Image (cartoon, rainbow, N blue to C red; front, side, top):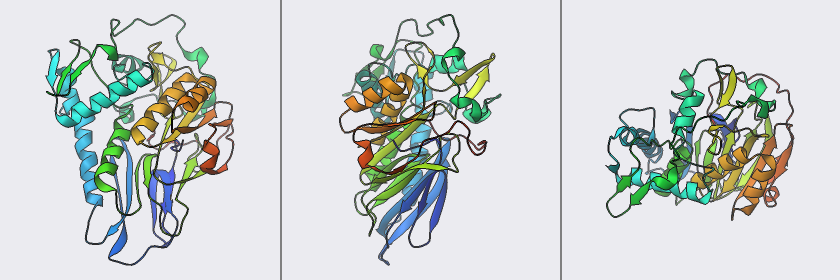
Length: 373
């Protein structure tokens, strides 16, 4: 699980250093002179920092295409943009919506993930997110909770009484897709949120489009894909940051042809009606998950699936979450508990070069914009 709520850096042995809000990417190894060269590009999209590091022929400019793809998929999938195709689907007053091939593919992937996880990941939980207060971009949410509270037990913060079902008993199982026509049929009034997988799904699409020749790393706020092996190195060196203090690295991974995604409750948190809320909804309760895990990082073959697995494991909690990750083929994981303990799946140790525990008191309070999903 490699994405920590924190920070990733990437440093080339040529002396080039690219700092991103969340991830240190460091291709270790010497790079040759043109016609091949490292191409670096950083920008913001999908409310996070994006960094592309691509080794390619000098005659091929690929980093601009990376940004174009992120801009395109953000316009397609954002629920906060009224002009996005997802927003048009949600606002559609009929039960049948004819989707573009790309939106159809994203919704199809989300429904597949919901089915595979037994509904622990569910793209139809938007009414619960909005009830919890996540009805605008996170930057616009008022009364955000200091991060220091993130390591306090969560169970006592959920409302005592069960909350009403805002979906009228409907969930992802009531959506029908027709691949031959691009038709999405859903109950009238049902709305979708693809924020729980859209970023990772976009990284995968970018990797499919861009990567394939030299080593490359596409990093979206810590959800990333490491392609190939930089020359003269064992792989991409990924630093995992402390869940509460991104200035402190707590783990080092060496990866090649791996996807990494991290989910955490330590970032997107706020107060509503005196209750501490966060953005990871447990569909079984309709409330922010009461979990004893503070962050989960998953490593796998695709960023989309790693992102889903990390979120599901975090919602399930330390014990069930670790068992869930162990049960998934070709997936490894790292869980940090609210007590500061680090727990690994059986094969994760082969990918980790260094691992520290985390403490209750971070070295400083992090007040920067929250990037981690």
